Image (cartoon, rainbow, N blue to C red):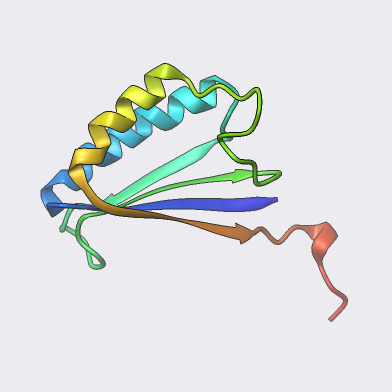
Length: 108
């Protein structure tokens, strides 16, 4: 099991809430299409300590799979929302972490 975290840096901290709203809608589309598990979106619009203008989308998955794999179709509505997000962000990155589960525990 893996934790995937997509981190966006908005051009303006004031855009963080808008980007978070768009990501929430986009992730829900992927979830309803069966392409994403339950997810969380969180952001810093400059009102809490931390990196202003940062928006994070986080979810888990059993396997890491390319969105460009054969036979896979991305929902058109999700791609349209992506087009609304791109002009508002200066950068984004993705993190992959293996989730600790009971079957992976070592005897320590």
